[in-house]
Length: 266
Image 1 (cartoon, one colour):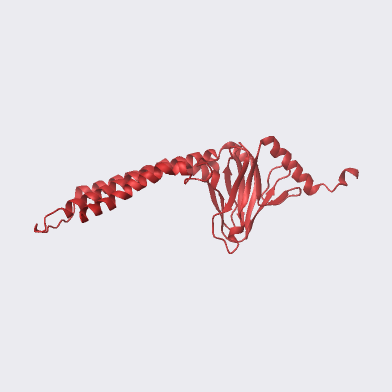
Image 2 (cartoon, one colour; image 1 turned 90 degrees about the vertical axis):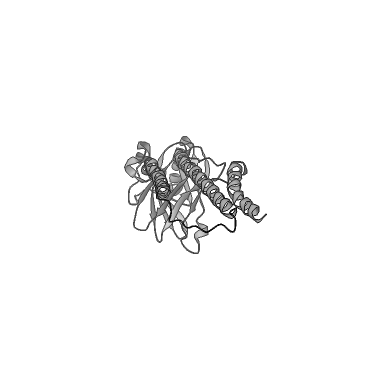
C-alpha cells in the first residue's frame, strides 16, 4: 500500500501539469487580454515562449516517469537482497549531457532573429526606423512624453514647438513606430504587456524601442522595475489611434499647447 501511495504521488504531478496546460487557454491564465499578442513582434515572442514551454513540459514528464520507475523497481526488491553500488553509466551521462546541450544551442540560434529585430536598431523594420514619434522619460513616479511638432522630426534635444504630456502615450495603430527611452533618475522598465514589449530605462542612456499596435485601442503601460516607494503610481496607457485620427490628435495637441488665441490677429 505504501509503495502504491508513493507511485500515485509522483504520478500526480505530470498529470496535473498536463491538465493545467490544457485548461490555461480556456481559463485565461495565460498572457494578458485574450491570450494573443496585440503586436506582430509579440506574436513571434509568444511563439518562442510556447516552444520553450512544450520542451520543458516534455522534460518534466520524462524526469517524473524516470523517477517513478526508479522508486517502483527499488521499492519492490526483496529485503534480503544484497545491496549493490554503482559508479554511474558513462554512456547515459553523455546522452543526458549532449541532448540538453543541443536543445539549448538550438534555442540560442532559433531566437537570434527575434532578439536582433527587437534589440538591434539596425535590424528594426525600415518604417519603424523612420517613424520616431516620441521621447519617453521615466522618472519617479511617472512617464514624461515629448512629441515633435506636426510635420517635424523628433530631435535629440527639446526644440521650439515640441509638445509634452504625462503618462498617455499616443501612437498610430497598424504602423511600426519608435520611441527613445530615457530615465531622469533611477532605473525603470518600460513594459507594454499586451504587446510583449519590455525595455529597461537606464540613467544616462537614450534607448530606441520599436513596436506596433495591431488595432486601435488602449493598452496598459507600466513600470516593471521596482523604482521606489511610488513604483505603483507608474500605471499609464498606450493609446493607439487610427492613423488619420492620430494626425488630428497631434494637431489638436499642438494647438492646445501653443495657440494663445491672439497670434492670428497680429
